[in-house]
Image (cartoon, rainbow, N blue to C red):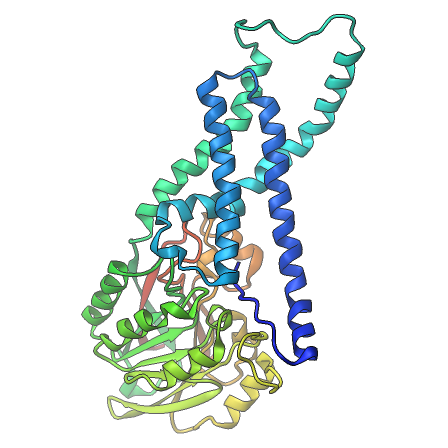
Length: 417
C-alpha cells in the first residue's frame, strides 16, 4: 500500500518496475483472499445468531474488503481519500488487516477441517441435524458466533483507543555519558525527533503540538532521523512548514518511507527549504558553545523506485565509509541514521541518533514484544566504550496503535562521563 505504480517509457525500466511490484501484488492478493476466507467461515458461524448480529458481521466484512480495495485503488490512481475517509475508518482498516485478520485467519483455518467433517457427517445422517427455526441457540452455536464476532468488535474498540492515542506523545529526557566529550559540550542538549510519518495519521494539530514542544525545550541542536512523510509526497509541504516553524535549524537524514513515493521531489523540496539541512551522506559542522559539532547524515540503503536515477544505491557500509572520510577529527561527531543497526559500523563516531523502530510499536513489557524480535537496538540509550546510541520511538505514526512504546520527542543531555 505504500508504492505508486509508474510505467516508464523505457521497456527495460517498465519491466523492472513490474517485477518490483510483483511481491506487492502477491501479498495484497493474499490479504484479500484471507478476508474472503474469514468472511466465508464467519458466515457459517453466525448463521444461528440473531438477524442484527448477522447483518452487523456482513456489514463489517464488506466495509473492510471494500475499504482496502479503495485504499489500494487510491494509491494506484492517486485519489485523495484522506479528505473523505475519517481517521477512525483508517484505524480500524489497518488494525484489522495488519493485526487481527492474521489471528482470525489462523482460527478459521484451524476450525476448517472440523467444519468439513461435521458437514460430511450431517449429509450421511438420515434426518437433518439443523435446529428448527426459532429454536434457541445451542452452546456450540453461541461459541461459534462469538468467535466470529469478537475480532471485529475488538478492532472497533482498538480503533477508538488508537484515534485518541494519535494526538499523544511524551518528552523523554535522557542523559548521555561520554568519556571523550569535549568540556565545552558538557550539558549541551539535543531535541531529537524521528518518524513523523506526516500523512493520514499524523497531521494538523498534532504537528503544531510537536513543534511547540520542541521549541519549548530550547535545545542547542534539533535533529531528525528519517521518515518525515508516510507514503505520499503530497504531505511534504505540511511537514516542511512544521520544520520551518521550529526556532532552530533542523538537521535531517532520510528514512525508508521518505523514498516510497517520489524521492526526487522529496530531495528537491527539502534541499531548497530554508531552515532544513538534509544530509545525504553529507556532513555539516556547526559551532555549539564555541566547540565544533559535525552532523553526519546517513542515506537509507534501500532501493527507491519512482524518480530514481541509474546511480547505484548505497549500502550502509559504503555510506558510512564515505562519511568517515569526511570526518573532522577536531569536531565532535554526531551520526544521524534512520536504522539503529548502523551503529554497529559507526566506528569512531561517539554519538549516533536513530529511529525507525517505533520502540517496537506493540510491546508487552520493556523487553518483550516486536522491538527485541526485530531489532538489536529498539528504544532508548545504548552504550559501549567510547560511543553511545539513542533510539527514538518516533513522534508520529504509520500504524495507529501503540502499546508500551509511546510516541516521543527525545530530550538528550550530553554529559562528561
